[in-house]
Length: 78
Image (cartoon, rainbow, N blue to C red):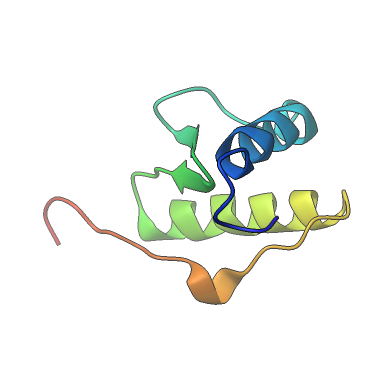
């Protein structure tokens, strides 16, 4: 989806909501916001697993996922 137009965030959320309904987990673990997806996990392995699941399932529905744009934030004890 092209970024910039005012409708892009709304269209992103509508399409992702419909296409991910069957495999998404409830808040606070996953959140669709503007044109982004937030995935929260308790461990790094859990996060990698969820991100790969998202990528595979979204791509199976004809969408592209840019993993090189993916950002990871670690919060808490290391």
